[in-house]
Image: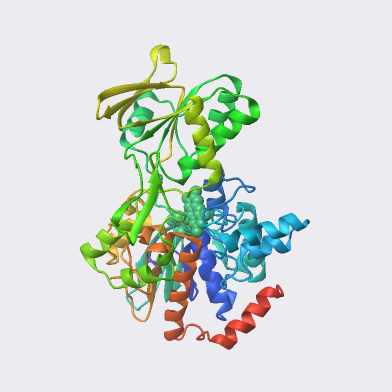
Length: 489
Ligand SMILES: Cc1cc2nc3c(=O)[nH]c(=O)nc-3n(C[C@H](O)[C@H](O)[C@H](O)COP(=O)(O)OP(=O)(O)OC[C@H]3O[C@@H](n4cnc5c(N)ncnc54)[C@H](O)[C@@H]3O)c2cc1C
C-alpha cells in the first residue's frame, strides 16, 4: 500500500514521535545507553524539545525567570539527577547569599522552607547543553506525523507529512522496528460554557483560557481599573493570581478579583491519617501534582500492582486539582481578603454572556444559595488542559487500526515497561509516555522525572531485545563522568 501510494520509505531503527521533552529524555537515555544518533529518528514540528513546554509555561505566567513546580532533582538534562538544580544554582552564584540560599532551601524543605523549584530558564538552558552534547539535532526530521501502522513483516510504518516544499513527495514513511509516542497533550480542553460563549458571541478576548496567549488582559487592566473572574484551583490559577497581584502592587492598580471555586476545600482532607492533604481557603495543597512517593516510594510500588477499577480509584484518591503552598501566594491572598479586592464564590458557572451594551462578561452561577450573576471585565479560565485522547488523530488511528486501547482512566493503555498494549508487531514494539498514558501502572508519567523513569524502563526493555547494551554501574559512572565534563557522545 505504501509503495502503491508512491510514498518513499526511509529505514531507521527507532522512531520517537512528538519531539517534546518526552522524546528528548528518551533520546538522551538511548544515546547514553550507546545507541548511535544515526539509528534514532525524532519526528516533530518543534524547533527545540522545550519549545512547546516553554510556550505553555510562558502563557500560563511562568516566564524564564520564574520557578517551575518540580523539584531539584527532576533534571531532564541529566539522567542521574546529580548535581541537582539547587547545587548547580549554588555553584553558579556570584555572592555568598546566593550560594547559600538554594542549598539551605533543599536542606530545610518542606519544613522550614517551601520546596525548592528551579527557574524555568535554568531548565531550558541545561536542556540545550545536553541537546548539543548528545547530537540531538542530527536525529530530527521535521513534519507532522499522520499515523503509525503495524507492518505485516513486523515493526511499523510511521507516516510523516514534511513541511511544504521540503521534500518532492507529500508523505514519507519511516520503517522501524521500534516506535515511541510522546505527543504531549492531545489538545486544549475548553469548558462547555466557555466554548459556547466563544462560538456564539465570537469574542475570544474577554473570556480566555490561561493556556492561551492572554497578555492583553494584563495590559488592559494596567490602562483602566477592572474586575477579573478566575476559575480553577490548581497551580495555573495560583500563577495567574500572582501576576494580577504583582501588577496591582507594582503599577498601583485597582484590579478586583473574584475567584470561583467549584469545590471549596476548607481544611485537611483524605480518607486516613496516612493519606491526608492539607487544604484551606478553597484550595487543596500539595507540593507536587502527586504525592512524592509515586516517583519512587510506596505509591509507585502499590499502583504497579493495581488493575482496572482499583487503579482508577487510586488515581481518584491521589489526584484532583491542587497547588503548592507558597508563602508569597499565601500572603498575597491574605492581603487581598483583608483589603477586600480578592473574594471567593463557590459554585458552578452554567453560562457566560456579554454584559449590558456589550461591556464585560456576565457569568451565571449555580450556587447552594441559588443562582448568582457575576459581572467582570475578563474571565480567565485556569481549568484543564487535557482533551480526550481520541481528539488526537494519531492516537485515534492507533485505537481504530492498531489494537491500542484505553486504560482504567480512559487514556492510552501501556504496560509496566510502557509498551502500548495491543500494538505488538513482532519483533517490533511500540512504546508511549507522557500525559496520553496517565492512568497506567506509573502515575508520575507526565513530569520531567516521570518521563525519565519511563525512558529508563523503555531502554531497559530495548536492552533485553538486544537493541542497546545493558547499562550497569560501571557504564553509568563512565557516562556520568562524560556528562560532567560535557564530553560529546
Ligand atoms: C504549564 C505546564 C507546566 C508544567 N510544569 C512542570 C514542572 O514544573 N515539572 C514537571 O516535571 N512537569 C511539568 N509539566 C508537565 C510535563 O513535564 C511537560 O508538559 C512536558 O513538556 C511533557 O512532555 P511531552 O513530551 O509529553 O509533551 P511536549 O513537551 O508538549 O511535547 C509533545 C509534542 O508532540 C508534538 N506533536 C503532537 N502531535 C504530533 C504529530 N502528529 N506529529 C508531530 N509532532 C506532534 C507537539 O508539537 C508537542 O509539542 C508541566 C506542564 C505544563 C502544561
